[in-house]
Picture 1 (spheres, rainbow, N blue to C red):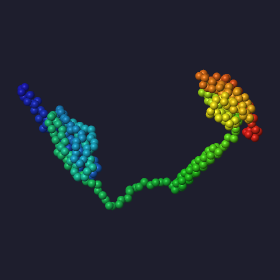
Picture 2: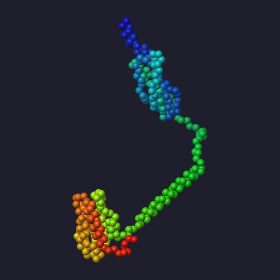
Picture 3: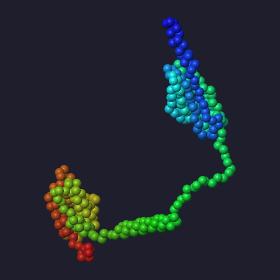
Picture 4: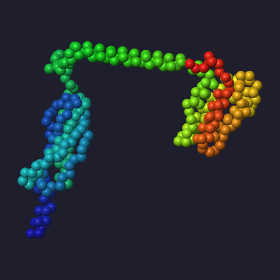
Length: 297
């Protein structure tokens, strides 16, 4: 009895193989170049069979497999039907050759027949055919005219705006400052002050601007080149200038005080800077008497 059981176990795969089947089919025998067709892979096996499915894709002569569907399965008693769809296309005219596809059932190979599909070029026709139900562009003529007028109006307004702005810039460029250097520094000194809430950088910028205007006053009003020499040398020249009416030695002290506040290594003290500002303002006022016709209107 044991011997018969052993023989039955050893022969079970052979009996199972006799029931298993595998095939690959094509819905057509001809296709046009660029078309896609679905190859159907179908296997029928026993529910206890061990199956090794073929890998995807495989090489196809004059064609290419571009997609693989999920496998469907259906039970019929002890048998299982497995179905999978592969999508084939071809970009070469002639014949697309699908080689035999293999699966393994219980270690034994099942092979499909090769498939030959003729690939035709796209058919050309000399017959002219109208487009069926063409979609018309429904846009009233009066709307088109209004759109054109609106576009031209916007362009005209934009052009006028740009011309006006350009002229305004030109007019601003042509405006000349007729004030003398003395009037400029006096105007600046009248507008500013040094307050305790100001930062060190803000006060330093104001002192630097005042010194620049002072040097401009010396150059233009009294002909002194502040690019060479020292404040002491400038004071000597001021004393020899008949138009200078102020205190030349006081200017040397004021310039030295400005350099001390800016480069002395300490933060600028607002009350000290305000006092210096008042002294320089008085010195500028006394430096030269301006003629009435030169005063700003």
